[in-house]
Image (cartoon, rainbow over all chains, first blue to last red; front, side):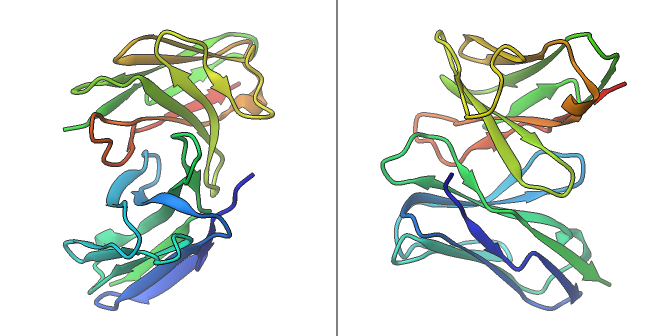
Length: 112
Length: 116
């Protein structure tokens, strides 16, 4: 099946530091979505991207849809303890159905 | 807006019994819903696409007779795990596309199934 390569797999940072994670693929996507999942909960949508080159912010979070339509990144500035969780990228393939392809996730740990 | 409610959040059942999980879109109509399975420390694995008024589309390797999906209305899809076995224990999550502008996919809060 289609693969989204998400990196890094895990991150351990100090409170206040900035964080960057990204997803790449060999396939072209129409939509890139970034989700955060807390233990025992469903994923919560953070940012949705629909156009190549689109740069969108949501508070301390910023994400971009790559120009090639094959990648996306998510930045978190000035991290706080509640940023802890697993972050997933997800994409909808160009010409594909409505179903999403998910990355394997980035586990973020923030030390106070 | 765009809330998806999933019930129950946790269920424990005995081997051989069936379990039904409900997924409801509370403030929008969803012609399409998706069912995922997630193993510990892993990503979400799409099981099937649920289409209102028609048969679900199952992903390769997912047993449709094992995981029965019914999408009888525009706000409700159900997943029934039939004749459950311990290996069916997992975290099951549904999602839906809020329309008409389809801004993102909204997920339910998940159901932790434990088969003993």
